[in-house]
Image (cartoon, helix red, strand yellow):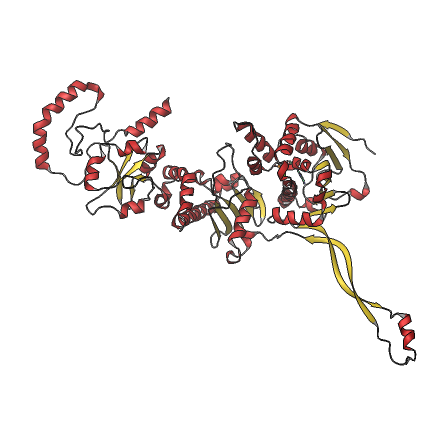
Amino acid sequence: EPPSEKYEYQAEVSRLMDLIVHSLYSNKEVFLRELVSNASDALDKLRFLSVTKPELLKDAVDLDIRIQTDKDNGIITITDTGIGMTRQELVDCLGTIAQSGTAKFLKALKDSKDAGVDSNLIGQFGVGFYSAFLVSDKVVVSTKSPTSDKQYVWEGEANANSYTIREETDPEKLVPRGTRLTLYLKRDDKGFAHPERIQNLVKNYSQFVSFPIYTWQEKGFTKEVEVDEDPSEAKKEGDEDPTVEKKKKTKKVVERYWDWELTNETQPIWLRNPKDVTTEEYNEFFRKTFNEYLDPLASSHFTTEGEVEFRSILFVPAVKKDEIVDIKTKNIRLYVKRVFISDDFDGELFPRYLSFVKGVVDSNDLPLNVSREILQESRIVRIMRKRLVRKAFDMILGISLSENKDDYDKFWENFGKNLKLGCIEDHGNHKRIAPLLRFFSSHGDDELIGLDEYVENMKPEQKDIYYIAADSLTSARNAPFLERLHEKDFEVLFLVDPMDEIAIQHLKSYKEKNFVDISKEDLDLGDKNEEKEKEIKQEYGHMCDWIKKRLGDKVASVQISSRLSTSPCVLVSGRFGWSANMERLMKAQTL
Ligand code: ADP
Ligand code: MG
């Protein structure tokens, strides 16, 4: 037997294992989700690579996951026929933290100020392979990569800082390809090795894994067996006629046996007819696929045909997630003809400002070996992107029209900034974005209004949409510029978020009505009286000159204005200059 070699874990691994075990203590069962998702990833990788290298599939074993339990000894084995690992990969993947999920998790921990570990936070990342030690004293991984002619065994124990690797020599354990994990459960966790418990966990956690998951289950069927009549009874009858055929007695017995049972639904939900999918199923798919703990605010399931064919389900989450950690989130899972390709292409499929949208996209028109370069060049992707963006806007509009007003308030609070960014970055979609914007106004207290509502409330003689930018609602409300507009009962939008004004300036107009900043000079409220203005100018012209002289360079000019009713004077911005608010912003930026 070849000797086993001992390796030390990278320092972070030990720390991570410690953290996982302590912070997930009360939620141990996630181990199964993690290990099944690794098996599913391994199968995905194999299927993907086999497109260009069909020889990888030469050992014609099905692509599936099998989970067997031995409740008497407290052992669970999870077997997949995926890509497996070479010796080097065992060291790299199971001895160091180079991999996505866990690396992100550690970064998140480092970034979050308070060192206290929030198990919600952990839930968002998926802690990966090491979660096996939540329930196991010992974990053995026997694995065979199709690129290596040898099979290797990795063995590690809980609370240890080293592991071993040796070659697999037991002929009974040799497999053509894939990975088998054997978990030797801790004394208190042996309950996980009950077949029904595992079945329930798989149903609960892995329902949307797109490979079949079989669990080893005890089955039974009843059958009738013939039983001989009791000979003592036959004797009693005495004078039996031997020509009459003896009536045979039968008895029902239950025959027990063990067999693999398919435990998950493998038809991807997006391939089903939307009419047959319930909201709860969509919600569950969302939560399971994206590791979310809240249901989405909205979802949209659609198929496009014709020029470009693809299916998609999109979601708007109820919470913003990536605040704590500034890492690229995996929001859009791209499939080509049902084969998972990557979750790293959101940038190609959605503009940056819609990066909060999550979902799956399955295309029949892209090549399976699609790369970022291909996506960026592809005309098909351009069309897909356009359609996806439209669907996303329809979905958001749906939230805004929903009877439950809270939903849109939530949406706006989380993603309003994204839409404002959209005003700046995506002029082509202004007509879709603008109706979704919300602002404070002079006619409301703290409630937000949309532009449609504003336009509906406009006075017959009002031509423009008025706004004022300020650093707070109070200073907007107290601005002297408002006086004349109040008198006329014209509504004024209060732009108190730093991005509001920039967004509005990019929009320029809405429903053919211009946005007009009431703090800029020569505000025209459509009520000019030229006679009177002339008179006033004559009367006060000298005074203006005098003030300008006194103030010198501090102001550009001093003018007579008709915009005030009670305040004696007001400081305004030049028509082509920055508004006071913009000036404030620019100053803040250059500091
Ligand atoms: P992640 O899945 O986020 O990459 P994990 O800790 O779950 O992190 O897994 C680490 C790595 O170990 C995986 O990226 C993969 O390369 C490898 N691995 C784990 N399980 C398997 C498996 N069943 N088959 C092949 N490789 C695996
Ligand atoms: Mg994983």
